[in-house]
Length: 152
Image (cartoon, rainbow, N blue to C red):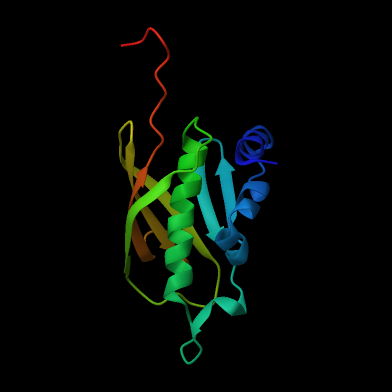
């Protein structure tokens, strides 16, 4: 199955697991996509393999950063009608506190969307959305809309 078929099936069934399974790092993280009505959310279930500092213990920053970026990509696939995977132009994140060995959740905020570029802010949290553990900022290249013949 190609991305377009999986995306169409996921949108119809509202089961995003097959789409997550297509992205190797998202599959490694065991990410979950949660769509309730018109609300998009993602979660990163805790797994011992995600520990970066066993002394604290704390989640690995790369796992949190990858989770934030993947969440942004999945949000754009869910939010837009396109079946083309957005391309990351740049992505930065700020770690605000250590990620404890428990599940992580993310909310996405569209800062600006143009025809070719979207800018997102993704907040990762554990105990409360008001206490984020990390915030990601990403610019993503969107495939430009095709112009049909006879259109200016």
